[in-house]
Image (tube, rainbow, N blue to C red; front, side, top):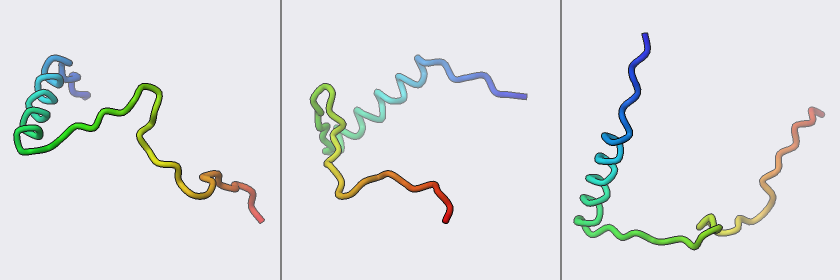
Length: 53
């Protein structure tokens, strides 16, 4: 048996409550420009070599 998915309105309400509590406790929100990841460039490549030697 699978559980029914939670309605989006409940999820939205929960996120709004959690956000309000976060801001009330002194938390801040950092806005990131459109098209930006907000991550700093890492040093080195993230590619991996899947060839077995």
